[in-house]
Image 1 (cartoon, one colour):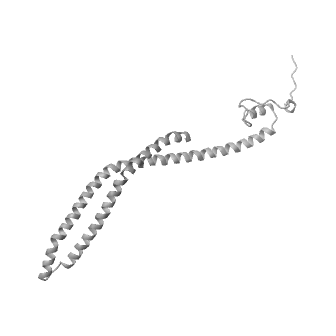
Image 2 (cartoon, helix red, strand yellow; image 1 turned 45 degrees about the vertical axis):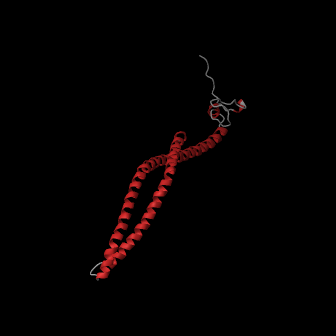
Image 3 (cartoon, helix red, strand yellow; image 1 turned 90 degrees about the vertical axis):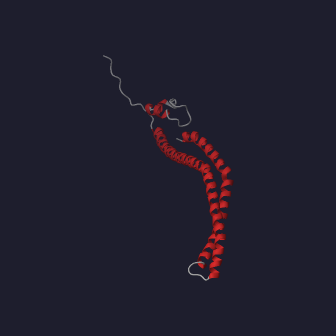
Length: 193
């Protein structure tokens, strides 16, 4: 699994970096759109405040001079409202165009990011399994070393010689240090008939 991740993660990471670069190219346009939207919201807040004041002072039964003032403000306020609405429509159109270009990049980047997260999780899991296996091997190796040191039979020497204790080639039993030390069970020979 570690090799699989090592082989497949770099192309995904490279692809992710390409999409990040595409997003960086559009960051200027995104920042400009955000600045325009902020300016629009501030402008709309000022006009809405003027409308609130106008509506508060121009409702109900009014004396003729106040009524005339209110009617005189209406065309000015209506042009302000129209300007805000037209500006908002233009911003919505620009935002839709930008969204059509940005959304596929963000979606593809999200997919690749999920793949990279899975690769990282798979690698972490494989490394944990490898560390667990290494710990088990070390525990078994220590136990087998102790057993191989105690046992002096030819069979045990053959089996113990197949383990790569000291970097010796595997499957080659080491020559006995002293053949007299081997304890071979003595069996009497049967007589010939």
